[in-house]
Amino acid sequence: MPPHARPRTRIQARNHETILDAALEVFAAQGFRGTTLDQIAEVAGLSKPNLLYYFPSKEAIHQALLADLLDVWLDPLRAMDEGGDPVAELMAYVRRKLDLARDYPRESRLFANEMLQGAPRMRDVIEGDLKALVDDKAQVLRLWMDQGRIARVHPVHLIFSIWALTQHYADFDVQVRAVLGPGEDPYPQAAAFLEVLFRKLLQP
Amino acid sequence: MPPHARPRTRIQARNHETILDAALEVFAAQGFRGTTLDQIAEVAGLSKPNLLYYFPSKEAIHQALLADLLDVWLDPLRAMDEGGDPVAELMAYVRRKLDLARDYPRESRLFANEMLQGAPRMRDVIEGDLKALVDDKAQVLRLWMDQGRIARVHPVHLIFSIWALTQHYADFDVQVRAVLGPGEDPYPQAAAFLEVLFRKLLQP
DNA sequence: TCGGCATTTGACCATCCGGTCAGCGCAACG
DNA sequence: CGTTGCGCTGACCGGATGGTCAAATGCCGA
Image (cartoon, rainbow over all chains, first blue to last red):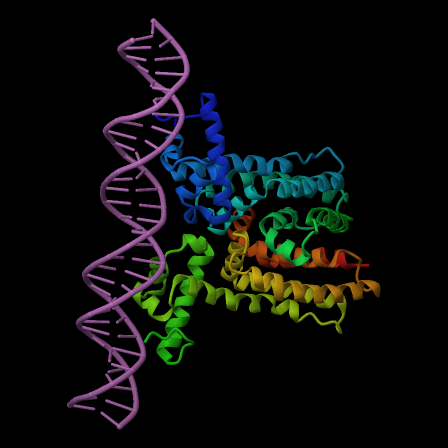
């Protein structure tokens, strides 16, 4: 019987991972509908029926990727500590988010694809966990603003701006590199630029 | 003979437009591979063979959309005038770009889709016209910085930041609205937020 | 009114796609 | 050494998909 539950043997663990990695590659670039099982199979170096031995359907592979995604994605925001120094906490968040964009661009693009399509498979999480977390952190930001420790701006749009500016480097990588010219590494420049931008913005 | 050239009669003009509008709708949400001619046909209210009477292929419809796109997209940047007041010019660019995101979100998403896929059908334009325009405007920005009229930051990343922050509201519309809560119009808030952000960033 | 061209469509085709299934090779174990 | 069950595959299926075509319909000027 196909192991549609969590991996149990070593072979299952390895192939599970191989398939998810290949699927991430293709889904991130082509979106859900644009991706075929054959493409995933080829990237994974496995046969199509073998894919379906480990996952019950294309849907299930996609779901598995999305399920893992949001946790990793929101971790840096969760780490923002009310007790720390406001500017330092926010700058650390920006830096971690930019590192995520650099180190996990495929995950960023998978997420972007889902958003572009109207989040048909993530609505619940977005309106639930994500909104709750943002509301929570927005309260922290408001507190810091009330205390005069950072400038008063719309706290949710402040968070949006961090998302937009960091994910842009992963999602629009081709454009960024084409415009900067070959040989330029965008990320150190981006880090320096965002450092200045947010420091100025937050200055009370 | 099918009019695969530019529209000549009134009917051709109307149907050309109807098809492109419907195609924009679907391509923007599903990407190129994820879109089917049947979907476009249904949105357009035409039969599939009729679509192919006006365009030789699905590719051709997509190409037609992309060809129109970049011009509209880059117009506000082109309008940035070396002779004007630096901060006013940049703020006007931000505002126009945000208006574009609000009024033409489908175009923004079509572009985003293309970028996510690695710009397979736009590489040339990106590396050619787009890069040339950005290089040109970056020179203007450097001049303004040399004159001490705006703060010194990486000019290309400054442009990136305008793109990222404005397009985010179109591309991630679902997320933005879900997090802000129902009934909130993101755009006035975004306009106010970006006004503050860029004014502070540009302050010498 | 009528001839001719523009427009539209139903039927069709080859290919692709997600998914199924019977069975093969093989290692573990009695 | 036979059996059992995991991992894997070739062949296949029904439906979707991009595209074709001959024929039907609509529109317009002479």
